[in-house]
Length: 363
Image (cartoon, rainbow, N blue to C red; front, side, top):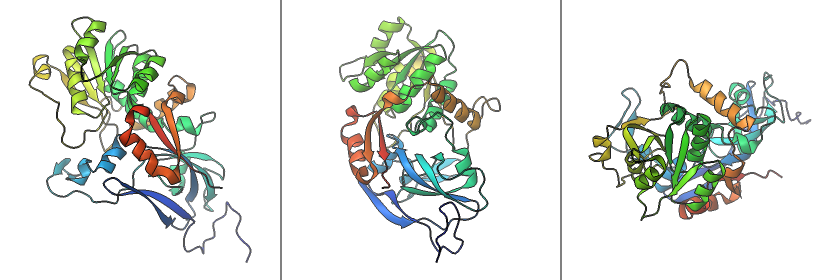
């Protein structure tokens, strides 16, 4: 029987092509699961992954078993967590993938075979997408997959900069110089702020310095707030963006601020952690603590002037134009079939990493 052309759907196909999905099947356990994609509908698209980025915060929380959703149940109607068991393993992590369109349904007109698209879906070497999702993910002309992998986190960082309401001439401390922190540092400088970056890893401090950021090395012997006041003067910084995901980092972000300062948190906080003491500087200096959330049904604070779509578009334009640099942020490229090594690297030697990406070879 004659085989269909690669961009034409065989409506009689009972199942789609094989694919491997990355799953966290238990705390500390990463596996690649062999599956088949569902059949391709007339308005659907198949894509093969070329690159995907690991979220060092969210995905490692799942891997360690400390994510809140594993231990409590989210009540979507009342918008709070309930005591009791949460969801269980396995968990399919990831949301930063770039793929090539390999086949389209008979009614698809928005994309064609060979197009590169951004895919908001867990790590896998193949995907079934709707035409709407595929079209929305088309890479802008002149933007590489390596740049595109940062679109979502640049949106997160941009939301954090907006939520701090920075003014030209203010000083902002960025606590935690992972990917989001380094993106936020660049965006804060574009907003006209003086930026001080704080981290415990020299490699990340060096990356921040390459972006024109003044840095503070946060060792166990360092008084971060005192070091920041050596730069700002005795009053402290005007604002902080907390991107470390640690209560100790959040406490230092609070400590470094002047009276009436504001902290925007762009990280998620997982598990039981020590280090946050709200009876101290937070109380005495009347600090404003702001949760910066750009998804999960949370409208932007400047809505309707700023929407999620506008944040996404702006973040993409800033990366595409080169105003926000990303080339220096990828420290490791690891083949998908060695994904376990990638997670081990992030977990056991975080001082060596900024952004770890998975690469895919379909030959």
